[in-house]
Image 1 (cartoon, rainbow, N blue to C red):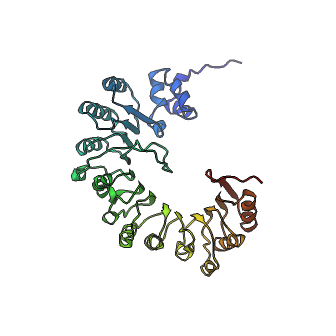
Image 2 (image 1 turned 45 degrees about the horizontal axis):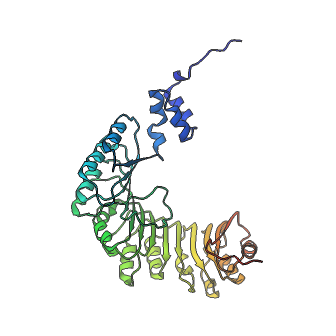
Image 3 (image 1 turned 90 degrees about the horizontal axis):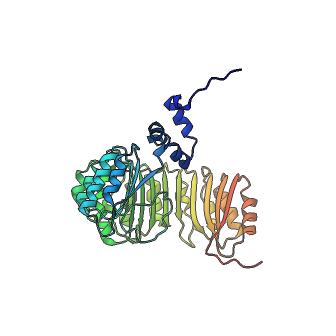
Length: 388
């Protein structure tokens, strides 16, 4: 029996590309060294979705630019490191040169350093497909920002209304991290410019630095807020801000929520499917407001200390399938009441705190939530475990 030899280089490009899709990045790098054709296919646009081009321009700028000019890769994510105290004209011109090479394909921009408003406008004007802009103004500070898979960007100290002239129609996701009052004032023009088109928002602020009543996000579907962005006693401000959301489907509020805020969110966006927040300590869980969310599937309550009898006067939330909470001092009767309010939970994530032991937690949960299909129990890392 004879076998006909079929050289791999004669395979159609779509077949080779499919083969490369099974290789990890390290192996695709090796395959890309075989020939120009393989280099192009191994790093085609399809495979660059999670690859980030990292550029540090403080030293050897021209060498980097010359090297990148020889590349045929169409990077979709760009992360630029700049000098902490500003970007020199020489470095900035090299940034523009790199964006001339890859800007037509860039969808996500991160820039750790400072750009003034004019420089920012010039950068954004070269990114017609930009979808995700991350703004971090102090990358020297070390905060724990949940939910970030790629390091956030830093920049942009001198925003003015010139940003209104920049056309970035594809930007639908914006992440902002603030730690100083001046940063809130500088970022406000960007928020006003992009607010009508944004669908995914992440805000983290160490204090109340943004006049929330001045911005509205009517198209937003995902909202994440952390830190003290909403730390104000002015209920009118909070009501005005949250009433501006109309299409929210996912809401994560990493702060102790006021019931007025929850009422406004529920009234403005009754189609919410995921809601996570921190319940006020030693207060009744607002099941009456939550019960109006008929499409809610995932609920996170933060730390729960008690579920009093009064909760049983509310209608059970039959749509909720997934529940997460923190348990510290908790009576078994409270678990029973929680099960009464959430009878159809099949997935639960529980963090134990204080003196609540794992065996006790498992026993109480499994005895009451008998329909569970998945249970995750974790321990607070800060807790001092007592010997048994």
